[in-house]
Length: 128
Image (cartoon, rainbow, N blue to C red):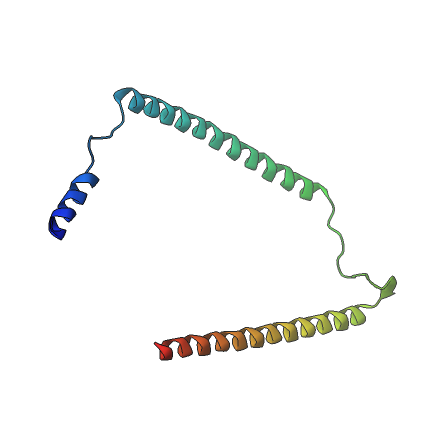
């Protein structure tokens, strides 16, 4: 027996023996289920829209009735002590500066790690 004969034998063994398909009864059940699902989805959509409208109207009424507060003064506590707005501003600027420094450090570390990966990949390609 030659290699080509073995190939043909294997090809014959791998061919499907019968056609596989859904029965008419299964197709009907799937069709009925999809129609029911569409009806349920439509009802859910209307309830969702109604709930959103009610929520928006309630929020509008709540904020319309509540008197607006005067936000001209901000009170800040640092370590349990009341701080002035200048102190709070200085603390916020220092926090932002620390965060920016942290982000720069992380970016530098990521760049260094990426460079190591690139060097490793180039070394692997040069070995091949």
